[in-house]
Length: 114
Length: 114
Image 1 (cartoon, rainbow over the protein chains, first blue to last red):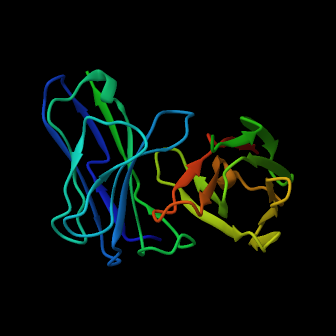
Image 2: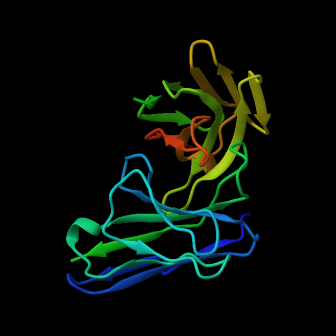
């Protein structure tokens, strides 16, 4: 089983609140990713990082932001949550550069904004 | 446009029976194809990964096939078990970017009944 962790697993929060979804991995992977997944739909890449101090936006536009201060930690922040942010957020990591390497996923955070 | 299409969208089978899930893709240039299993409320877990030169790969009761000429893949599950109930996601990686961008299908929701 992959050593990648996400907290909280479930979060219900009111509109306008600031939230941070935590993701950490103990595998020493350089690349980390955030995906958004709605029920019955495909995963969409919203952020990724090649390594410390590297962050890029993914395919799907997102109002969230990310930071990568430490290799093992890749938190995602929403400054002001809205009901449209309700979704499942999945964090993943992989060894750097080789396209054939595995992406390991965390268990996900189910976010509900009321 | 790079796409990954899976069929059927959902499938119900009886415990002990075999089943085959399909994946068609238009991703180009092709790098590799992966099948993931995603249990409800969890992150995806890799089952197989195949490159252009591989046309079959097994992982226990799971056997994936790849026809790179027709851009089709299948995942065959033998002697299904209740624990096989999950979403099975086909993911294709391209060679056209340094990130090794992943294109996700929407998954086939498999339910195994006793």
